[in-house]
Length: 96
Image (cartoon, rainbow, N blue to C red; front, top):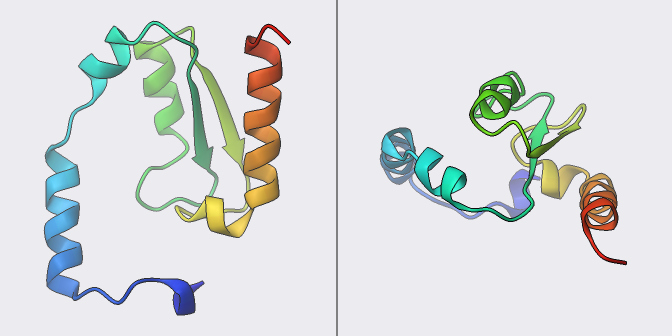
């Protein structure tokens, strides 16, 4: 996983995290009226899976999924699990 990661300086990474720390997307999420799927990773150190409870308190009608035994890079670690979660969500919310 590390071999495929871009080579960024630690300063750039820390600066990026500082920007993300200030980002608040709650208003945008509340404004959007379409179906939403939010996937969390069981071992994510940046966005803990426990944050799903806060999300559901804010947006009770959204769908939340958990990719267990995966970190923040869950898309790279378990692409088939992510694809299956998205496919199930689309099947449930779509017009087939």
